[in-house]
Length: 400
Image (cartoon, rainbow, N blue to C red; front, top):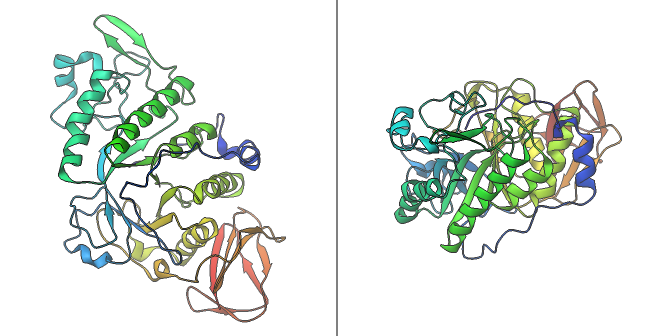
């Protein structure tokens, strides 16, 4: 689970194209029936939550009753209600003993290279796990038998694929077949040959899994290279959509302006029908040192877009594997009582049974929101009535 630098070409984050697409009522393709699958069941109110890896949590009972989904569970021994998933990278060989030298000696035609035809298309510069040609039927058979089937045999109800990019983020181009170069992709990030191959791979994996009563989760990257129709189709092929970017993007600047609007519109579009786990990493090393503004931003955005299938977590930058918690994640202002509203101030608001969530996505303008009558209390105990001033790129949750 790593970040890929965003680019601007055909960028959804430009805002207008994505907004128009969503406004037209486009929805993800219908997924296969999942009634027989064991999937997370988030609560109707409060905050549905997930855990990112659990291998450094000695006593998993700490999240009993709080967590509905474990991404990359190291053990099936989970508290009641927490559904585990088995982690593996989507496009790489997960066997560390299969080095590039091993591949060149045993399966040279399985390695995917860059345009120079000699450098493997390493993901994130990580040279431990070799990128393999997931279009190759022999690779698919190997991947299934080596990684997926053992986890099914162990009893995992969900397989979790990491770093699924519908854009060609690592500039894969092709492979060698003996002395013949086989070009599969253009090497551009926005590449229909790549996205078609990825969607076919997801369809293959999900189809086989569903036939066995097993679910599929995938960390599907959202960034500036995403083509909306590809993203919608990919999300429609999985049972749990993991969104590692969340609304914090795990970098100093949150989503804002047109970038925020594109992400928000997309998230609202899928919220009612897709199990969605958003990972919000703050810019601090630990959640304990995160700013009040960062915590409020993540929770306010979640409550703005949420439906019952929505889950989230908050953590420090890369603070995976351990259990982290904060009072904001226990926020419960009831169930939504209305759909989100774009306020005249420029902010977005949503009424709940016992409160209100507010988000100002502007990078420059303060939004002054007129509140319903009464006295309201924010997540930190401060009271407000009449109006609330939201600084640029901020959020707030109010209870009454």
